[in-house]
Length: 268
Image 1 (cartoon, one colour):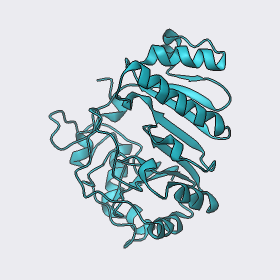
Image 2: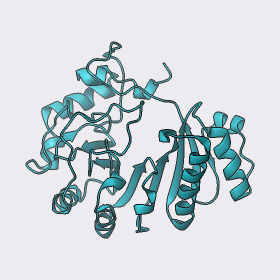
Image 3: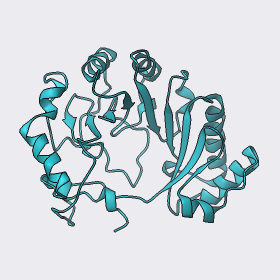
């Protein structure tokens, strides 16, 4: 398995309009439970992404979680809205993705917000930093202006829109993504045709231990088991999982939630 998403909290400090929002009980994973997960994932993956929903930097033990995973030979990846980036005290992070499109405020506030993020990015010089925007996000032009001046680059919006990913320096990148619609059983659009990388290169674990096929099943609709009660091998070899994987290989979506998901072709 290439990677596993581990939701250490489903709480968030923002209320972004593009987010599906948490409908579950707000929780923070304990460090002891995280250690159980690390032990159970040993041999299945080396890459952990500490989010599904929620803002991982809200967790009061975020640095302890990162260091615990690192000390157990996992590569730690974090996706954050960046507001709490100063809470990061450890350097044991493989990649930090910052969703700049989540910023809410005026231009002067954005300049301060971005400066704080870039200051931390410069300190985390061994960590890959991905500065992420939706296509046509606010402050994209301003961001390029600031980055070009700070790092003596010449990144144009036209070039970014064409390439979608540009290296700023040896460890900082700026990335452009199409906004997507979260899969939801209430979505009107549906198709049984399609494939996915879920369960073939990744799966997710929600804060209560529920195992889900991917990081977009934020409500735990496709409940494949519980990491605290079930063995990973039993979950991944269950009839339901095998049926889903076989379906994806045949360009078929077996689960209703998957039929309501168009992440891989969100340009439609």
